[in-house]
Structures are given as C-alpha cells and as structure tokens.
Length: 441
Ligand SMILES: Cc1ncc(COP(=O)(O)O)c(C=O)c1O
Image (cartoon, rainbow, N blue to C red; front, side, top):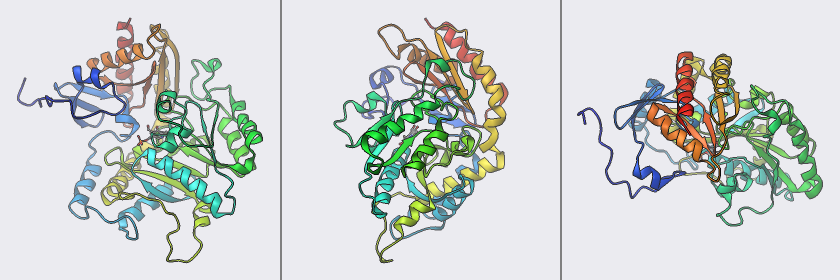
C-alpha cells in the first residue's frame, strides 16, 4: 500500500453502526478517509463522486474553507456556553439569519442537535401550545404512511415506515396516519405528479372520526426523502393547509431534507407556496459539519407561551447543546457560503439537466420508475423475487466500487448530490449509475 494511503482500522467489532448491515459491512468495509468539494476519498485512495451530499446534508459540498475556518476559530474562542438561562451571540445571529431566508410568518427558532430531536420538539411544542391556549384536549398527532421523521419515539410514532416501528413497542398513543401519496399512475413523472391531491381529503375523514378538538397537529415531509423520494401531487399540500387551517390544527413541515436549497428554494414551503405553522430542519443547516437541528415557529405559537410571571421558564424543553457555539458558527458560515454561491436556488437552474439525465436511465434493466424534483431523484428497481432490497443494495455496492456514492432504501436508489455539482458531474454520476445497472442481474 503506498505510504500516502491511510490503513483502515483493523478491529471493527466495537462500533455498532447505525442503520447498517453490520455483519456485511465488517466483512467488506467501505471506509471514507477524507473529502473535498464533490468527492470523498476512500481508504484505498479512490475518489468517489458524492451523489448523496453525505446523508442529504453536505449541500455546499465537503470541507468548504469558510465553514472549516469558522468551526476551528470558535473551538478556540468559546468552546461551550450553557444553553439554559445563558446565551452567546452566535446562537442569536444564526436564528436571525435563518428567519431571513425562512417563509414569511415563521419568526422564531428553537435549536436541537438533530432532525429527530427537531421533530420531537415540534410535536411537544404543538401539544403545549394548544394547552397554553386552553385547548388541552388537542392531543392527537397525525403523521403519514411511509413518512420518515427520525428515530425518537415521537418521530417513529408519526412516521410510517414499518421496519422503523414494528419492534419498538406501542409507541405514542393517540396517533393516526394519512395515506402516502405514491400512486402507480404517477410512474415516470417528471417533476410534481398530477394525481393524488384528493389524498389530503383523508384528513377530513380522520377529523370526522376523532373530532377536530382532539387533534393537535399534522406532520408531513413536503417531499418525502428517506422513504425513497415520494413527491407531493399537485394541489395536495395546498389542500392539507386549507383543511388544517379550517379545523385549527397545526401543520408541521418536516424539512430536514428539503430545507436549505434541495428543491431550488431555501425551503420547500416556498417552493410549493404553502406556509406551515412550524418547520423542522437539520442536516443542511450546518452543511452536515456539526450536528444541529432547529424548529421554526410562527409568532402566534411562540407568543402563546410568553405569559405568566417573567422569571418563570415558559417551555420546559431543551438540550445541553441547543444552539451550541461551534454549531452556531458552522451554521452562520454555512448560510454565508450558500448566499455567496447562490446555492439555495441553484437546484432550480440545474433541474432541467438533472431531470433529462436521470430519465435517460428509463430503459435500463429492472428500472420500474424514475422521479425527480429540484436536485433530488429516485430510480426504483423491480425487487429480486423473495429478496426485497437486494437488487438495490447490490447496485449500491457496485456503485461504490465504480466510484459513485448513491443511497438505497428498499429497492429505490435515491440521489441528492451537493448543490455545487456541475452539469458534467451530473452526467458522470448518471452514466456511471447506468453502467452499474447494466452490470446487475
Ligand atoms: C424528514 C426527516 N426528518 C427527520 C430526520 C432525522 O434526522 P436525524 O437523523 O438528524 O435525527 C431525517 C433524516 O434523514 C429526515 O429525512
């Protein structure tokens, strides 16, 4: 092995890896040792084109100088500040900058350390908000089939992915689910699908069943990513907004993936022209560099808590690392990088090229659907009989060998490259994926 290549650690037993086939991985490890811009470097020295922005989070690409400098500078200036009853300037500055790019009407930021915590925080705020207004009977939470809202108990309860739920007991009580929006008639759609706005009307059925005065909030991903890129049909989110408003139910958009430019606007709410009462975000908030999430709320929600004696804590909730100085510095530098390079709208410019490239895979072996929006795409494969997920997982392994990082969920290949990708790199990513699909059985 040449001296400039780092050896892989040779004992892999201790680390129990998250959402990973541990035994398979440890037999044939896929180690990344460095990254720059659009590429990772694997332990054997190979450059790997990042087709997934890490895990949907490195929207500005990797090891970007402004973010690296901000983080290293803050580590040596203010390593930590207590998050409760004390403050530091960075957390306030970042909150203001997030609100500057957020949809009109969202005016406050509550920090968490992850998307999962942002979701659980938003659900708790929804319950406490109704109680603060004297509507404490609103305790039900409505999620959606195939939704992914992280892995906290709140998130898996409103989430709708069976393997994330089935072995974890009875979850939160009082949760119901809307049907998912993935309809066969929308196969091979380019952009937003035509059919399915009526699926939002299922909320009326749920309201009729339970009574609006028992329902606190509805949470959906405006575009569902982790479950395999499920796009909202035209008119669906608008209808969901109308029905929630009519019944006094809060609408929460989980924008952990769609936040920070993925669809060509800062948030999906702006892309679709539908403003929820709360947005959860994480990932791209710090370009994935330091863990951080956030809940954005309307003034009405925030203000409902600002009552009672002024020395009393208004919301008994928060994390040791809520808005920590280093994450805040990373967040500010990330938003500056996005602004300087026009990254929050770049997906809209690349979308046509992306769509054309992706759909060129339609006639490849076992491809049953392709869907895209902004800089996100999915290529769905027919499962191997009796072995769901195997075909896509094998493609993922071959893709890594071929020099591209893709992500798979079941038999769906999801692509979400950093927003700095060039048209030539899109062509390279898709051409390599095409070869990988052709080489599969
Ligand atoms: C929509 C959505 N919500 C929540 C999460 C959970 O975020 P985290 O893994 O940071 O807890 C994710 C992660 O992919 C997500 O896609």
